[in-house]
Picture 1 (cartoon, rainbow, N blue to C red):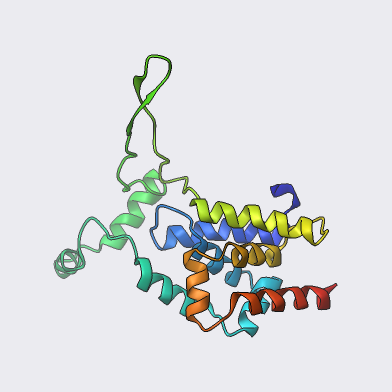
Picture 2: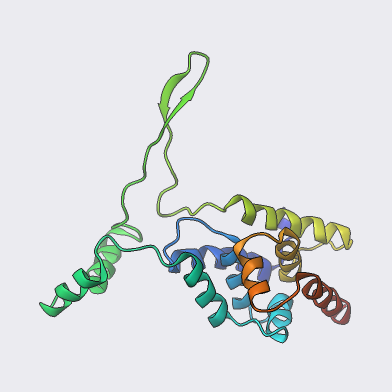
Length: 201
């Protein structure tokens, strides 16, 4: 499927991972895809969203209000207390990651116990580490629906506009909630995307 993605669409998928990482989320959700689409300023999806009055700053604020940023092991008060005696946690984190790699201070992956096999023996299965952030089922559905939208429209490629159509069609994730909170009708937004695609053709 990814061989059909345009460069901008691929960048948006990678950008969703970057958005999740920046917010310190351990998953890539529809909200991260929406933020990444807005970040692809040359893409048709970003143009349609901007024309509809959707901007990254407001989407990010709505996402933070809904799910927040993953809390650090030390609270804000602890970080401020350490800063008062000359210890900058951001500088420490940066130096450690510079020396040992990104995510070096992340907690180790959890190994849940699962029963597998003929005799149901217990096997430990690793959870993805700091280098890999999994897509939520809804985010995976958005990507699957983007392919379906491209096929339905008889397009040989999948662009940011198809990802946006998939996001609209999924219609139940946090991204859809953020869009409707902004006063948009998902049906109207879909029509705007299709109109923009016709004009661009």
